[in-house]
Length: 109
Image (tube, rainbow, N blue to C red; front, side):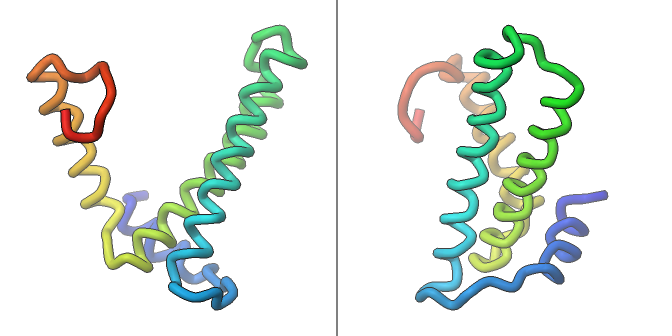
């Protein structure tokens, strides 16, 4: 499956409330689901002795799927393709790597 196909198919399930600008809801959902991913990772250390169990991996996979869904909706609402976002991100990272700026702070390094 491509990002384009996922974005198109996932949009069929997008049904969220009108709370101002259309992109507010998926932005809030993205932050919430990202927090849930972090919580599941935290539990690897708190509850599982630092070992990624098959059960925990499945829980994280579900949460990452929710993150992906919100990213797809946010991209659609902002008239961006996920393919374009992914390509742009790789170009940015390769440029940083080439310039030996992969580490450090700041968006424009």
